[in-house]
Length: 314
Ligand code: UDP
Image 1 (cartoon, rainbow, N blue to C red):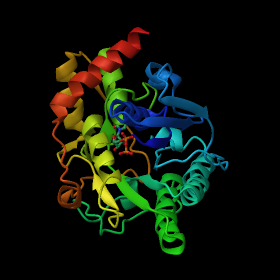
Image 2 (image 1 turned 30 degrees about the vertical axis):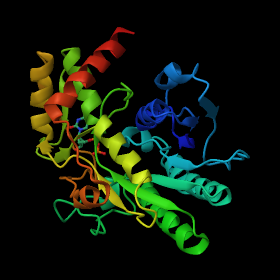
Image 3 (image 1 turned 180 degrees about the vertical axis):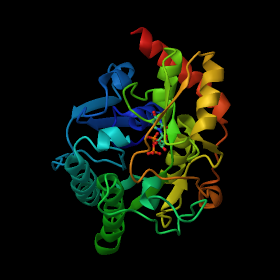
Image 4 (image 1 turned 120 degrees about the vertical axis):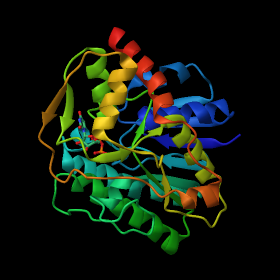
């Protein structure tokens, strides 16, 4: 049994991770400022004596005196409309939050795993994206608070490792979907499922030919946990995502079919710097972690649609 800190523990990925860590018999402390995280995601664990919730914003230093074995740093708004609402706050969360968590990990000699992102590749000029690709990020665009914030956070991880010997792991997460996503998240999977369930127009940004590769949350969490337990000298960065690539139009068609919706497509302008394509090369994860995603998009959409249907009934 380990004592594990999960920042962003009430968020989509954080809460799914807390559940798996508790199921495996660990003690979990979840931190969240509830900016995008939601108490209902962690409600089922609140009575579990192995679980503790602390409302805390990681842009402020955290004092913890108990020994901690592992820190998963998942705290950050991750959907474009959310992270663009207050871009300077997003950068602070990425950079000051990372500094504070690296300080804590160094002091407690805990291993720290950073939730980085495929957004470090920007609008990629190389397709699909291996970890060696250095990316194509617009440093002054509307996505840069998140993209550059996360790039700086990666740099901090590796600098703390080189300068102070901090035990680090870095994963780059590609588009992920599943239960516990916020219905108001604003990303494509949640928007389209909710629109389809309500027979409202499905919003396609641009002409819908841009691509994403969608990973079901259970697959992602298993990859994340394998990364934490990977050999001590493997720091990453490692891509975690599903390499099955779809256009946004294909996604809309699947969701309309699976929900039996009468929704029509509505074409809206493409936001600036919206990446045209995204697909991970996952050879590193396969070699180092023995991991690959198992759940096809059509399979993963079914429990996700059920989850959003229940959310709409609330
Ligand atoms: N998108 C869309 N309709 C929506 C929301 C998003 O067509 O209602 C598009 C968006 O422009 C992008 C893709 O879907 O090209 C994925 O967007 P999302 O916000 O889910 O994540 P991103 O991968 O861009 O961070």
